[in-house]
Length: 631
Image (cartoon, rainbow, N blue to C red; front, side, top):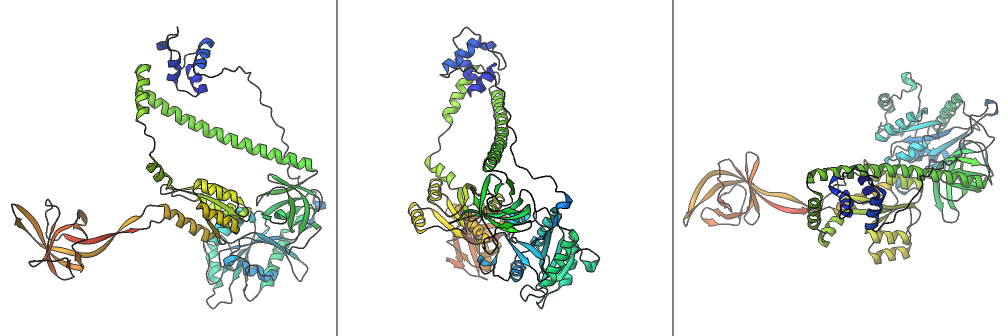
């Protein structure tokens, strides 16, 4: 081993090795960092350090066999049967997507949704009078959920783009078009709110041309249907346009063999444990099937449709609720059927192992980068000590160590006040992911650090409160509850629990919480302005005092307040007045239009005609965080 390698292995610096080899027969001065040490000296150093020497053979890493479950190869065209289309409705907030879906399934979703904004991806079947069926994915139409929405588009065959005729193309309309293009999915345009007086469907069609969405009227291939979700006008025409497009796409699926599908949403139900909403894409799902999704598996105990009715089997394109999961899979995970429980366990173990390996690789990369930084710093330090003898170096290091102060309690408090630790709890996986997605956009760490201590799915627990107490953090709950016992416990421990049902309210609350951590800003409020018309000086005792003759142009000058002198737009002095006179009398206030004479608390300042005197007061204002989450 070289001196440097030994130092690295012992996690000491090179000088430590030199010191350990003092008073031995080895010539220290001839040793360099890359000199090889004999076994005797290596043992000597290790003994002096109080460490143990362990011999070991270099062993070969055993490569584990890939046990993952994968999709089956393409099915034989002969075994395919037609299936109903899976349609996602997308568009801007408030353009009427949910109302449209309500009319389609004749139930009230919006009435149950807090604030009328859809919070989760739901999925349901609509049967048309003609006997055709369409599966609708009800995606949340909100900026915060664009991550979930991107997934919603991956399962989809057709996107219905809802644009309000009175509002036109908005930010999220453009996002929706982008998602549809990324997933290479055809679009049907639904121009909503056509019953309004200021509706202008033609304007919408023209605006969409800029985004390569060309309607049939303009020679393109996008069908445009004028609808009104409120009155139910033309909704059948929209459904028929969708069915026509689906017929052209010739959608088919293989109803035989092991099941393949996608998790649309997952949540924990109090009585039934982990539940997922899924869309089956291949095979027929039956009770008792063994499924794997992400890093969890299930034996299907129960299946139900969107109305909560138990069903016995689910064919391709059907949305289905599945109960029987061991853990909660994530929204967007692929569902695959396997032959037995032992195989399912094997797949999940392999996936966990693979993730662990991936994480180790990442960690190694980080460690390597840190090591390089460390080496660089060490090299620079070596250069600093340069040609000094190692004994002198040790002495300098000792002195440097003595100079490093320990943080005093007050300084530590100041450092901690600039961190906001948060704990996030949501009702379903997708919501938590969306909130974390928003927190990822946080870019104001220089003002206050936002620290995510813990996140999870489900109601707020005692464990969350204890964590929050330890880290002095805030708990945010989205669509979850905190029992009275928990709330009392939190109040006792001084922990804030904030529950929200609408995502923007939660983000606004988070912004306020961050702002409250920032130091107050001093704002100047101008009380009066005066311009200098003449300058003269008076003699007080033995010294001359410069005096400015002014006229107040705006507001009033108050002697007790602060003043500044401005010349050519630059502030050249700030301070207070020593005297303020009107004619011969000392006064405390001079109002607009009146003349006065004043002198400053600094003699060195020379007044000039045309300078401005401004009277102002300072007020403390609460600072606001500069973070803008984008909606």
